[in-house]
Image (cartoon, rainbow, N blue to C red; front, top):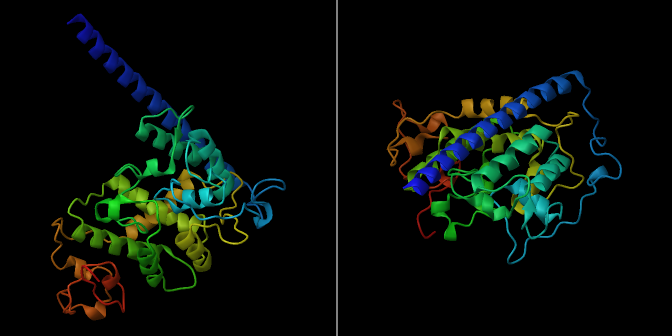
Length: 330
């Protein structure tokens, strides 16, 4: 009985200490990030071609040679991390990557701020129950469902709907659908919001285990914002990055702030995207006619908003202009 009581007390103390330490760490990160926002505001951005210093990896657009993953390599739901592994910036097999190394390599490759590059690996380590300082991860560890990976991703089918639940490979049909939503020479907030609407609606209709918390909605919009803030919204560059998970030729981050893309600055784009995504009209998993309305031009809707098409909209592609409905087995 005494041992049981001691065990309970020790667990409570450990949990409390861990919560306090984590709260202090987050306070430190957010305070530091606010300072970096101010420093970026009063500093001149680096000129194109000057972001990466001579002698550093990626200077002049010279990145290690790209190789596609081979059997047994570990890959994640994140094209950004997969591209780093495919270029050998991270271990090419995607395995045993120290969280501290992940922090440094993300900053060097994409020019995220040191606060962002600490927060994300720290979150991953905590999610996986590992030490940030001494622990490692394989890229496919990130695919734990509803950790960082989530339903209604723009470029991955839901885990419940994926063959074997594999989240490590690009889904060309979803990437195709995304570029069908882009109407100009560059990807915009409106393009990202519209495709997010389509993916959320389609996923909610087809996935019997669909979930998307507020946290994961914002995380999804963060992934969207990366396409603009880090990749510059360039369609040609994004096609290379999303289809092949390869850095575009002569790649350099479009964020040239000397202290990198801070979380505070990043959130301005994230919130714009999320705010532009129309709220769902029903929590019913069958959605009723909502799935047929989302993403359609007003010319295809009746006076009361009803869908004038005869076909049932059951896939992402039919929600895009000019696409024919698909059925299972097609």
